Image (cartoon, rainbow, N blue to C red; front, side):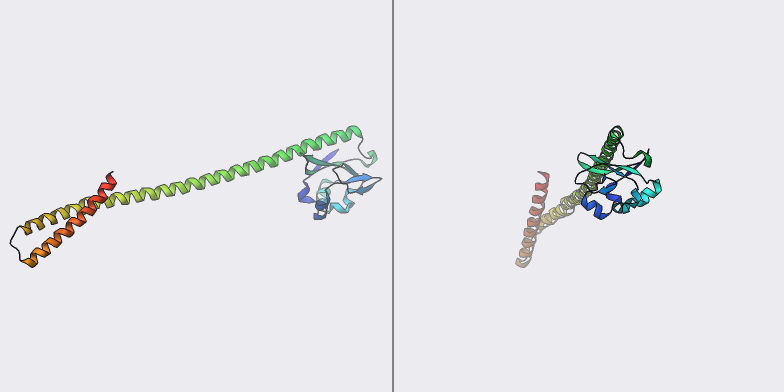
Length: 212
């Protein structure tokens, strides 16, 4: 015997897919059955429902074939085509049982391969999602580091470049207030000292909150 395998969804016509993908035989006439069934075709290349299979049959050189549906877990997986000598007629019980066993094993293998491919695809999708999430977290961490560095620079500026000059400004303001000043000068120096103390308090408050 020569064997051939066909995956149903890829080779049958839309009309055949819509009905059942099932063939049977009765007195040499091909019938469409309501449930999976084996079939015997004396000239499969003339079967009108097999238009999509004709290139494959021509490549394999099949004419008289036994057809065994391949199902696994109740799901169609394809067709097992076995070329038979025309003189032998349809397969008898021992041969038919063998074909059913082979078709069942091939269907289970095809289904397992599909499940494995789906599992691998989902694993790849999870890995891709993990990589994307890791990249997002890495970018967020980088921005956090940059923000923390900017905060440190700002605090350093407040601590040194603002507080130190303010202390000098307030010190000289106090010295000026101890001298003989006109009333207008007195008001100006007092305003300068008052605003200096206010700014210094803001800086001290900012630094105190950060050091807690």
